[in-house]
Each structure stands twice: as structure tokens, then as C-alpha cells.
Amino acid sequence: MRLFFRLVYRDINLVIKGASDTGAAILFYLLAIIMFPLSSGTDTNLLTTIAGGAIWMAALFASLLSLDRLFRSDFEDGSLEQIVLSGMSMEIIVLSKCLAHWLTNGLPIVLLSPILSLIMGLDYEYWWILAITLLIGTPSLTLIGATPAALSCAIGKGGVLTALVLLPLMLPVLILGSGAISAEISGLGGKGHLYALSAIFPISLLVSPFLASRSLRLGWE
Image (cartoon, rainbow, N blue to C red; front, side, top):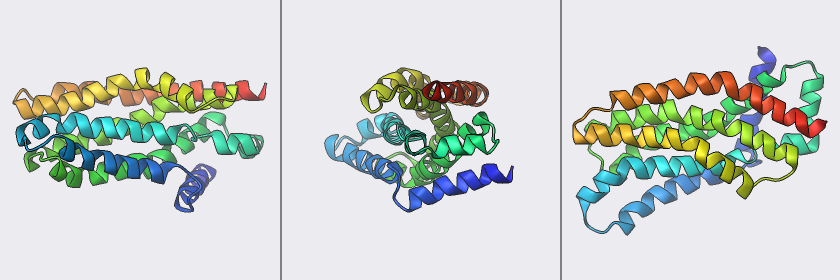
């Protein structure tokens, strides 16, 4: 367990030192949200209507930008293989990578949501539903993205290929997350969407580490 947290700490340090694209992904997220009000004109009702979907769309693409390098740098320089040779389970390594990614990518998105809601003109009474959907949904985005990111390392290709594989897999999270906010704003209540969104996380948590670890092993065979 101590080694698990050491790996998480190591990956977070790499982000802080600038050895990752995560900072650029968060910056993209901020700029994308700021640009929506500028492009929607003076129609505040329209801005409020699209606020949830816009924030979720930006969060999804911010995850896409950083997920391609989730394993790549350690895979290419041999660090990942050395960690495996130390006796640590590959599935645990995948989980540590995913946790570090969420702490440096997903968590900032959640923490920034009240400020960005204000920019998007979303009433404060709906901030809670936005924050909860992001808190539940962003870990799922990371876990879902782990397998395509690992597969891109195994076949030696990334970038556009990773995005093409990831987008269809992430659509349910995007639809349910933005749908919960829209349903709450319209007065229908977003609890049904929240329950469905919550179900994706444990499934991803159980399945993704095994698929991602298998994909990484393919690159060593």
C-alpha cells in the first residue's frame, strides 16, 4: 500500500514539475469555458441552458488532452517495466496512475466548477448538481480512458487514435452528466441521471485496471 501512494505522489510531482500535459489540459478547460459567453452574445437564457453541457464538454476534452500520456512516458523510458519487476501488480499500478491523473486533472475541474458556473450564468442553486456530476463523472472519464491510453502505448500510436477510441466510450458519461444538470434546471429533477452516472464508476473501477494492464503487457510481448 505504501508503494501505491509513493507512485501516486511521484506522478503528482511530475505534473507539478511540468513533465505532463495536465497543466495544458486545465488551461484549455478554463479558456474553453470563458469563450462560451463571448460567443453566445447577450442571450443569458441561452447561456444558462447550455451551461451544463458546455462545462461537461470542456471537461471531457480536457481529460482527452492529458490521457494520451497517462502511461506513455513511463512506458517508453522503461520506468513502467521496472516498477512491474519490483513485484507490484500491474492492476495496482494502473489504479495509481488513474488516481494521480484524477487528482491533477479531475479534482481541479470539480473545484473550479462554482467559479465557472458564475461565468456561464448558471444560478447558484444549481451549482451543487454541477459539482456532484463532475465529482462522480470525472473519475469515470479517467478510468474509461486508461485502456485506450494503454493500448496506444502497446501499438506505438497515440494522439488522434486515442481520441477516436475514447470519445464513443466517454459519451454516456457526458450525456448523463449534462443531462442531470439540464433536468434539474427544467424542474424535472436530475436524480435519475445521477444514479445512472454513479453506476458507471464502480463498473469502470472493476473492469478498466484489468483491460489496461492487459493492453500494456501486449506492448512487451
